[in-house]
Image (cartoon, rainbow, N blue to C red; front, side, top):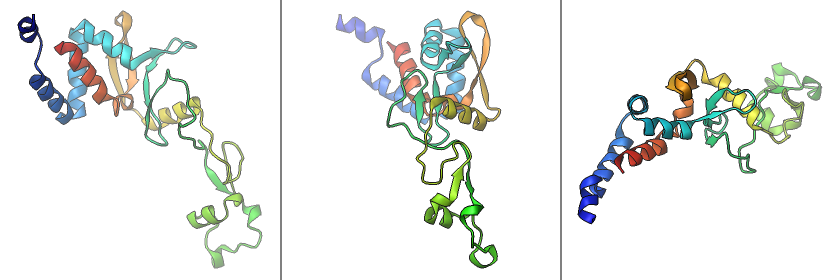
Length: 192
C-alpha cells in the first residue's frame, strides 16, 4: 500500500521543490499559471472560486473575497466578522480650524497646517468625515474601508472565469498578499 501511494503522489522532496519554486516565481507569472489552471482543471477552478470570490447578498454582484486595507496594508476576508483589533482610521482629511488659531501670524509663526502643529495642537484641527477634532480616535467600518480601497485601486483589473461561464472583473490588488497561501493550497490539491 505504501509503495502504491509513493508511486501515485509526490514525495516530500518534490513537494519542497514545488514550494520553493512557488515562492521564487514572480506574482505576474503565478497569476498567469493560475488562470491557465482554472481554465483547464475544474477542481482548480472550483477551489479558486471558493477561496477568492463571493457573491454580495444585497446586490448579487461578484466581489473579491480578500481585500487589502488601504490604510494599514493588511489583507482581510470580507466574509469574516469585523474584529476589535482591526485598524481604525478617518476616511476624511484633517483640516486646520483657523478660528482656533486667533493670534497666529503665518509670516511670523509659519503655516498653521503643519505636522508640528498637528502634533502640538490637535484640538485645532477637524476631520472632514466626522467633524471630530484631531484628537478624535478613528473609526472605520468595512464599507468605508472598501470604498477607499476601490478609490485607490485605479484601473487595475483582472478577468477570471466565474460560475455559469460568465466573465467578471475582479481587482488585481485583491490577489496581492493573499496569492502565496492560495497557490500553496492549489499546488497541494493538484499534487495529492
